[in-house]
Length: 188
Length: 346
Image (cartoon, rainbow over all chains, first blue to last red; front, side, top):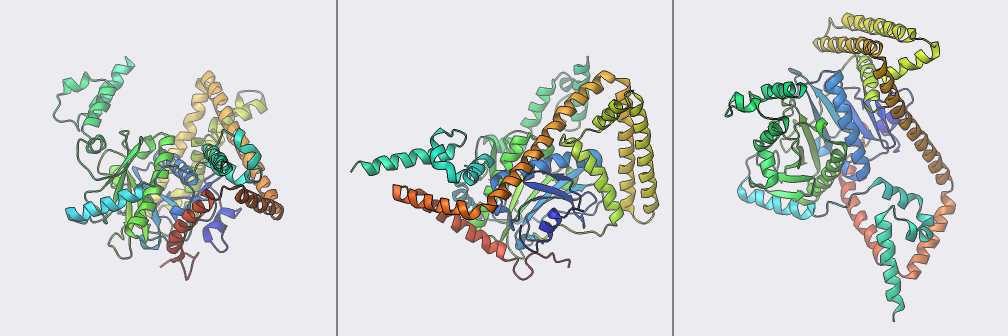
């Protein structure tokens, strides 16, 4: 919870009705909507940009967003929906709190999200492919909520509990490495 | 019989799309075959299987990310689930969760690879929302100041608060039902139990009707000003229909109602216990945060122990890596600078 964040205040406020709320995220109606039924799905805790949000919170935000979008189709008779995350000031993010915009679409609503495609040369495409491919190798091994909970909550107890704890693969891995290292240390 | 009818109906629906097949052929196809046919005609399924060449930047067992051939910006990525699905709401929940995490990963990769100042993440569901191909995709577009992709921002309209409240009311109920937090029929059955007889349901439905009619009238009063309000009035009518339909069903088929009550009972019980748990967890966390001085003392002593034991290799490295990443991100987050948490209304 950051001091002075409008959306943190909104999330904490008692008189604001949350359309949906769980451990990690909250959905509210955007007070100044792009279209009627414009919903914001936000993490409960304060993260200025998308990449700072832990993986499992991103996952639960998307999951909530997707379920809510079915309601927009059913209840508001939306003909389509747009999901937009503006991430960073350059992308048009207005407040320093991550949010997923869920916008119901109808015929003639005057909204337009159609960008003008750019023509890139083959060479430019190849260089961006190579650059991105290299960075994308780091994807995978997502933070799971259980792992996170274990790391945070059980750290003071972890030394004793590590060997018997099979819930969390990562700690087990660490433990075996520690064990190996210890053995190695002892050999000389 | 029913199955055949369903197949015919779906075949009729697809007739427009598949011009090269005769009607008779289509009518003889099963639903699975039609799904197969759709998959055959989907360009993005071909990209996923590799029959159409594309610049792949990431792939795993559930999804593939390729570069868009008509990019909004250099490095514009399309993230595609391997499964052929038209719109996002049809995706299973675990796949949505996986896609979300991969999206975050690719967005982060875009920031690093192109020194981008931000990313736009965009999903269009339905042709009217700008979807062009019948395959779910997530656009991830690296952004820089004044790059000409300014359409991807959220406009703001001023909407009277009463109207917002109406939408809020209509959605709150529906969303609670969708998440299994509440079932409209469970409320009735509770009342039935209280009154001991079946009259409760009828009364409830009557009051529901009255209420929704009232709101409908309200909305019609306001609708004179704005055309958008007219649509809202429609949605009000929809809710009216929904409210009146459900009690009827409950009266006609009591057995089904009971079954649903059971289901809803079990499903509504779960979230309750979950919220209790989270409450308990919150309080735990609270107590933990109160104990911080002690525990931090302990953990620091443990850290000292660990370093003595000789596992200094991994942890510091790990911390360094995350620290570096965060500092990059902090730069972007820090751009909010002057008025960091305010929202510019201009």
